[in-house]
Amino acid sequence: MKPSEAQLSPNFYANSCPNALSTIRTSIGTALAKDPTLAAALIRLEFHDCFVHGCDASILLDTTEKTVPPNVSTRGYEAVDAAKAAVEAVCPGVVSCADVLAVAARDASAYTGGPSWDVKLGRRDSTSAYPDEVLTNLPYFKDDLQTLIDLFGRKGLGPRDMVALSGAHTLGQAQCFTFRDRIHGGNVTDIDDGFASDLRRQCPTVGGDSTLAAMDLTPDKFDNNYFRNIVQKKGLLKTDQVLFSGGLTDSIVVEYSRIPANFNVDFAAAMIKMGDLQPLTGSAGQIRRTCGAVNN
Image 1 (tube, helix red, strand yellow):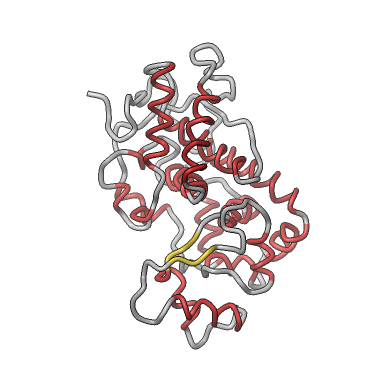
Image 2 (image 1 turned 90 degrees about the vertical axis):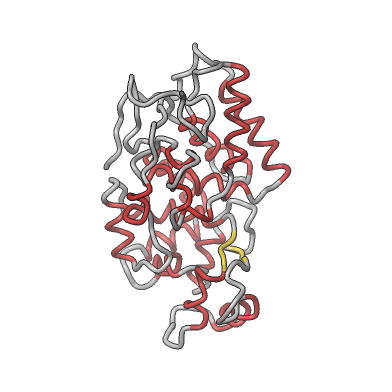
């Protein structure tokens, strides 16, 4: 499943729904003003959607796909539903949920000080979910570097794309159970002692699984602190720190830690590339009226 250029265009709704993008932006901005943590959730939701059977809004269906780990902790569905409802009020039956989600992820990045980009549009929505494909297509928080490179490579995304997309972890928080082994493991050497000690006070060896820790020092701001942390051995998850572990991605992490503009450019490019993953176009799929259910 690699990127496809099929029939997607930033101008897809120029005639059929010219106010689509501004309507989505206003709705998402309202949601983020109430809860800034939704920015990380929306970008993550787009990633989890695109990596499982393509960018088709299958994750938004109120079925089993969203309940399979690691999707069980995904959030932001209500914000997407609200944006879709706002667009439906302006242009009923025109704009897909897949496109609403893609635009919402872009708007979340821009809202938090990150890059913006021209979202390619024209995706249609799936009529089914794909729970059996979740575990084999999404990264696991204990994956090593080569496993991540291989996983992204199967999507047509190279190591630089992978590191840039991982930089979305500049936003948001992670639950204790995802980094417990990293801070309590006796043989873990790729973590700063003081950083680990601080985390151990929040995340004990037993209990507190859902206790949250920030992914970087500025969890509601899109910046390059994520990469600066990794260089200092302060990556929260194993999958964060392996990006700077003596492998071929070290130089990319150092570059992004020093030149935030390069990170921003590459993140935008990688999001566009990811958005091309196996879209439904033409007469495939449908334009759902509500994102949680297929049309009757």
